[in-house]
Length: 505
Image (cartoon, rainbow, N blue to C red; front, side, top):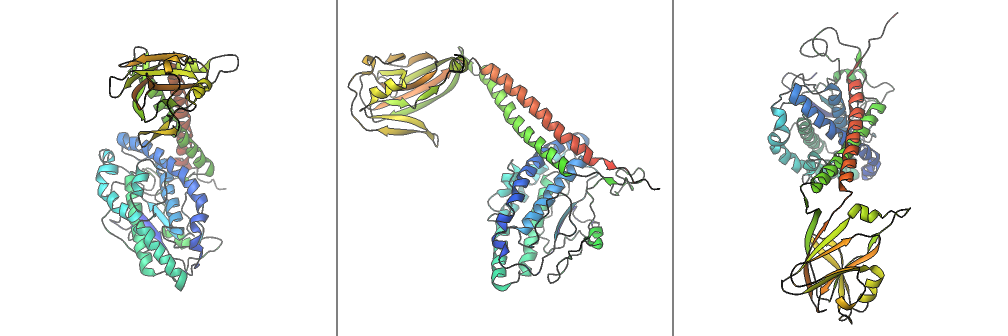
């Protein structure tokens, strides 16, 4: 057990010896399967941490099953980091498990908190932890920890920070001498220990503020785990060492003795043990986290569609934005707009977009402008041999163009006879087009066919299908959210349930 007054997060590691001189060169490739799994586990960690936040806020307790899972994710991450670019401290491949492996040289344990402050949960993970984030940002490299903290599922904290640099130096020395420098190992272990303490604090697993102290060495000051010397790697027997397993308790498991008595709440004897996080339960939680993440996107899209349908609709049109365009040529053209008709003759484009409204203004004001929409083939023939620019999109917030060489148009735009709808004149011109399936091009020019062309365009549309789209997104989001919540809640509850004691006789 942890020593009295010790920090409730314990991180231990033993340096294996001998280590391969060259294996570290390819470990970053060998752990790719772990990184793929951890990407989903960290997504689940983030979702479950939100659930734990509200549980602590209203009850003052961290749900036991969620606590076990999140500790397991940190433990798994630590083993992978220790094997790969976070330390290069062992050549033994990390196990694919959330549980502690007594035979593996990297361990992490966190005392389960009987009670957590409801007030601290509101501020400790962002405000109180800010100084710690700055420090471990230097350890991990360029704010990699902030990237995780704000939603990224990045499980690699070494990067190009101090930890990664020191581990790389140690690996290069290992390559040439066959020995991992003990002083560097002690320093790297201490830096990783600091990061994991902050991770547990930010993950709401403890109210004890991480100490501003670098506890160097493989053995955590608060742990009774005996770390073998570098010349004697931990034994690899068929049954991992009993002493090691017993000296590294798992306080995060249900049924562990606590300060209130022998059982989880001090009432009667402890149960036989937790049912734990089986592979099926872990997969269920990860799938639930994915569904919850998808539901947030669907609900956000549905809410945005509702807002556009109500508050952002004026005179029946939804404003889609305003942008300025300019070319030294004689015309501005859109890319070809492909609108298809569904099987059976249903005009999908008109059902979705309804009527489009363009408001075009010359910049500076005073120049008469011409805007027209024509079939793409006819528009291409009209612009053949004309110097103009096709609007291809935007880059860095500015429009991007594809220029076409040529001269002035042979025919003024109003006399071309190719247009489906047009608008021309000085001042702001309004063009309305009942959208129809087909291939179309929008062209804007000066009415007298001169160059350059400089305009500002506002686009709006009636979007008759938008209310239905909003309803569909909200319903789908609610279904995904409910399914995700069930996939998370059921295994979390089962993982917290203690097994029945074996019946003798």
